[in-house]
Every structure is written in C-alpha cells, then in structure tokens.
Length: 246
Image (cartoon, rainbow, N blue to C red; front, side, top):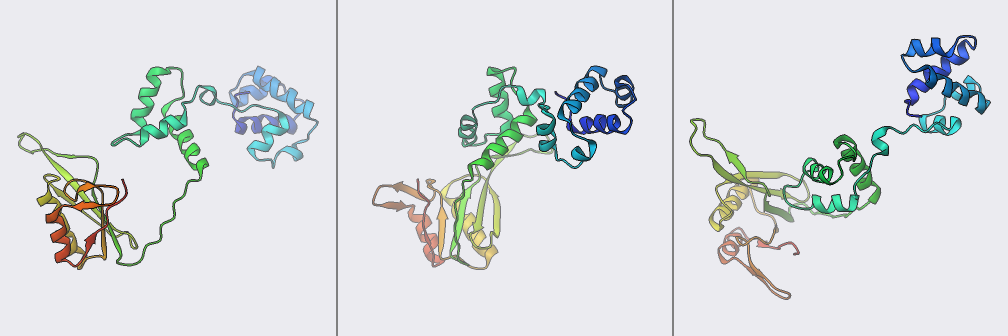
C-alpha cells in the first residue's frame, strides 16, 4: 500500500469514530480512492485491533501491525552501488549532482536526485568510520591550496582572471586563514605563509603541507626533499615542515 501513514491514520480514525459511514464517504472527505479506503478497512478488521491499540503507535509499528507496505515509488526504483558513488566522490571537484546525472544516464529508471542524496547520506553514516586526532595548542598548522580555481570576472567585460585559494588551519582551535593569490608558485606559496604568520601573530611548532612542488620537491621512502626557498622561509620563523603522507 503506497498510502502515507498519516492518511492511513486518518482513515482508521474516521472508521472507528463512526463504523456506519461508508468507505466512499471517508474517501470523499480525505480525497483518496474508495478502493484504497476499502483495502485499509479490511486490514483493520483482519488485525482485530481497536483504535486505542493503534493510535499511539509510531509509523514503523503501525506498518508492522497492519501489514501495510508504506513504500513510495522512489524507494522501489533502482539505487546505485554506493561503494562506486563514494569512490567517485573522492575525485577533485566531484559533486553528488554530477555523479547522479552520470549514473542516471546509465540507469534512466533509477531514483531521483533527492532520494540519491538521502540514501547516500544514510549509507555513509552506516559505515561508522571515525579517525580521532588529538591536537595540542600551537603545535600544527595545516596548509594547502583549495582544489578549485576561482574565476574573477572583470566588471568592464575584460577577460577573466583566476585565483588560487590558500587555506591554513590550526589543528587545536581550527582558526582558519584564507588568501587568494595568482598561482601555486613558490613565491605565492611563501607569500601566503608570511601573511598567515602575520595574521596569527606567530608561527606554530610544525607546518603540515601537502606534497605540492612549492613545498616538497621530492618524497622518497627514507627522505623528504623540502623546497629550499620554503625551508628557508619556515626556518626564519623558527618552524619546519612536516608534510602529510602520500
């Protein structure tokens, strides 16, 4: 039965309130099909339950008591492999909207975008993946360029320019510094650090960058080669790089 539980409750309430009224009268009052009312009333009679037994039940208990399958059309449509969706979400700039559109091209009868988002969220929560990190005040500053380049449009119609977004965040307080620069070059990378340290009023014990070339020239099994200019900059502020794992 596709009828929402809230309407099932109304039908049951009216049925028990006045058992003499016809199914057609109940259907007219609730603007549903008389056949739907008849089917639910049959289930009510078969259950042997009174209104006092039913009225305080939650939706799941209601469905179980009356054996009504409250499944929407969307719930019965095909769903994607959520492992595949999660893998696609790991790519830079990936969005659920884009992934859903690509999947629907292969599965036109599949669930809609709203159901896609809700089911992916529920699947993600069911995995219970947690990584606990303990941070000490002033110890680690995490730095990187955000993945997406920002377009800057000229108000006079001249060609657009583009900005790289530098992001730095302290591990303990999550205090965040953000700056737009023209490129991911070593000069712009170092400028962002200088401005960031000025904003923070000091430098952390460790700076934790990703493995971009402006920070790390080469990473081997037993050796990390830090960009000399970057190393000198951090040394001036009495701190050092501790790059993330690959």
